[in-house]
Length: 403
Image (tube, rainbow, N blue to C red; front, side, top):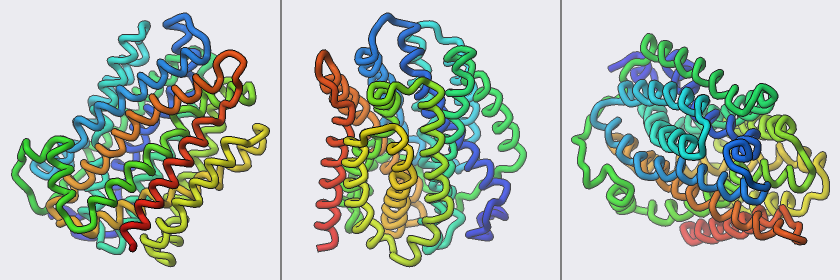
């Protein structure tokens, strides 16, 4: 048994630092491209903002489709072969992918880069399984929050770097990310131990999205929780899916301002999921967090849809981020039900459902944005209104679990 596994709950050990950096770099892959996406698409194809939004939705959905297809497979592989080889191989693939994206000169090469990134980023389930390996039951939600905080930090660094380096061209940020990925791979080779204590044979019937979902769904209470997770994620993905187009259309923001606004949201996410969740969840419990913060998120989305100015939108940012306590609370609740040798599988299923949401949401939200801003129509906040409706559905489903 590794040292990190023998001391559950130990904070910020070197292996944990590697895992959090890995998640941060994977999240940067989303955040880096958001500020420069409109300019990048206009460079490789001639189109207006509405057309760029539609193709941006296609690229985002292709990334998510790969996560959907591969998350259960990679989660199951980590249950069989261990967390270390899966995480290290993923980091190596991400390093190569950033180089591909930096060199991309056509839409199809961008699409290939997004596909490679989606497969590599499917290791989010393995990172969460690593946290489950080293955590006591009462610590799991907080440690899942650290993973979410790493993801949020990626949203800070990605848009900030993308926005700052946009003046050197839309590909410059990817070279910086490739250097970070290579350095983190070397770091992981040195410090990352194996934390898996109980191995489970690999089974292709369970190592796919539908098979894994059936296996996990048979556990008591998890079926409706998976539905709550799906609607929450579809609603919440409206932010990365539409933000750059929404803020340019509504307030005339350039790539730099879009980057800094996303960075502000990411900082708020880090504060919430890396710190405040450790105060909120123990006091309220996972169930009360979900009962209160799902409708809270729905109200915030309505406010964003109708916000009249850019500075008011920025003022809403920390309040929007506060609603992110929902995801770790849901993960913690689900993790209590699954056995130790199913944690990778559970996290793989959750990652697959998240990927389904990330497939559906960009296509849906960018289409709504395009319709709402074509010709004489001008309601760029329409997508956030649709997201609020989906968040209310998530809350209604959760109420059925508690009934």
